[in-house]
Image (cartoon, rainbow, N blue to C red; front, side, top):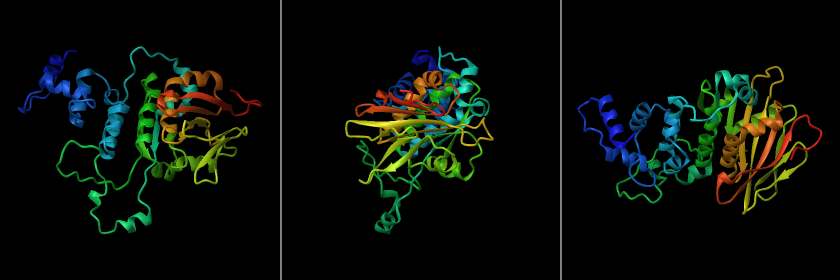
Length: 325
């Protein structure tokens, strides 16, 4: 569709008497965040109706990176409520997809679980008496007006980027739906299949490590204030300044509920989690080919210049006597 056609369709749908949509405003939305203006939630819904695709297909990681925390969650939640549209040209055998994600996800969907955080008691004591709306500031805002920012809890931008990448996993299968959930809520009521983001920052990781009879990995303190990964086969992974590691775990934590699957997508370092999510979205067919229906832990190496540089470093498949590299 041309810019004029989009503007005309908008004006036909919204006969409210307000200022009509113009090709220039459509162009502004299209160019953001490199230029133009950020589309509002209403604008995204309208564009979704006009283009015949889910709002999630109008949002990518670059858009989220240009948002503050409130705007980011608004965009992600809007994408979740709009449903998921299939990517043109993507084809996957439904049986293969169901075997990879598990029957419960394939039939009923999953919760995408992100961790939330609050200030520590020490920090809250230190800032007591200050205006809570002014504890944060915009990064390089071109506007001089006051920004009042309400952040009752915080979420990490790298976890949000990972979440957006993981949505691509579902776009091979029209029936699959998903909802957003905080790790606090997911742990309080673990009654469905999940895909969680974040390593020790996400309580779902700790829930898995304490629930599974034989966890596929362990988080080990390194004695220097950080941590490293040790897989069940003894292999170990530590992030460095030049490269970081991510991990994708598929596990069935309840032997009496084989249809329920937990995916843990996480990493060591800020690029590890989104790198692991990007690898999962782009390479789930290869992981399925190599692991079949078995539980697995896939470690990916992520170069410091891009989370999309993730490459498989090691694949541990539960029940196999040798390492699958």
